[in-house]
Image (cartoon, rainbow, N blue to C red; front, top):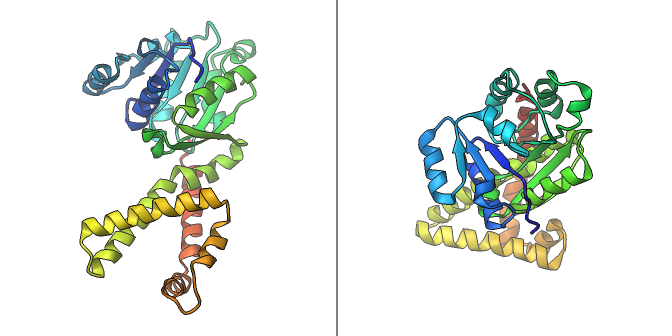
Length: 283
């Protein structure tokens, strides 16, 4: 991957903040000395400094002023306080071009702009592009899926920098921002749906008399195999399901129960609830 000679700051040293730092270092996009992490938890910062060699601070405004790329990796409910802390500080300014990337679920770009742009004149605002990203937890193991949306001040170069960072953790696709609530409901929350399915299959295996460890191994291998099959054959999941559902067979008996219980409808309804909650998280 392309190495970037930019100071990159991550505000929020939780799992996703660490995932970004670790992925960027592993992909050799940045050297550890070019990555700055801030958090209110000093013990957490000390741990990440020792683990990755990144620089750490508890001073968010200093990080913002010093860095060329600023990643907002705090929880949605903390975004408002963070942005107020930065923009109300008397030192707040944008002396050079700076990319702001937010991964706070449900927080629209215009709400971030409301804080970051209010103290700045229009000319300076153009030097502060804002990018909204919806990653997911498989990013922790470099198998993530991220949706990305841009504000009007994002240049082609800015976009390329953001994509380079995100591709260190997996795949990235650009969306109009209005689609990000759906992206959140599908790929953002999606890993939890898969974990729930795994829980259910393991529990079903145990109730049928299997050892829990064997049930887990069978479940995980089956899911991996199903994904590999769909990727290799490039057929629709519906077509592949029909191929393994023989009339009068065991699979058909299971699928009949899914249909009777409206499992597909429940999944679609659950995703709609997740998307609605994403909208609710707006500041």
